[in-house]
Image 1 (cartoon, rainbow, N blue to C red):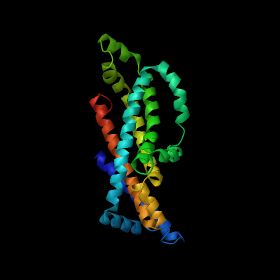
Image 2 (image 1 turned 180 degrees about the vertical axis):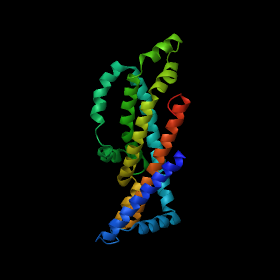
Image 3 (image 1 turned 30 degrees about the vertical axis):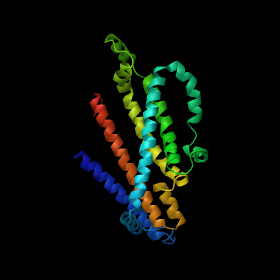
Length: 253
């Protein structure tokens, strides 16, 4: 029943958004070529599906996203667990992390393109940067906030490293880590599109630039809609995975 209610909220919200779009189209003085209606965008979406360009763009983007985001999360969590367990070492590393963290991933784009050229790597690197710092710092924070009772109990049972890390520290810190992974997903997806606009010749971001260059605003808006839908689905999937892991480790269900 709860799932049906959630689906209803999603459907109504999207219909309201499309309704506002149609209203803006009706009252707007802009040319249809510059500001198409929802129906025109739908026709463009069908066109992209039929000629295969949409599937190719989604495949290219998802390939880059899975590699960049996956590597970023794995490395950030691993380093975060280590640095969180070594607070004196983290005190020396933290100033450099805080210096690099506020820099927008797109600011690195010219340098990344110079190093790696045009293709998959620039977008993957940008995705990696976008997700890395939030997950790393949240993991360190989560480890530092673990109650001492966990370590006392582990000591009583004779649990030592590396078992302590995977059997005690990671499960105890996981709720906060999972929240950071969830939030980083949105940032990584946003910067994937930005990275593809500059450093790629395929994918959803490139498709937006290509549509702009060809003055196909209907394709541009259809692609934007697809990006939003995929982002919504990714958010749902990561939330589902988070709940299953928490349930397996005896957390909230």
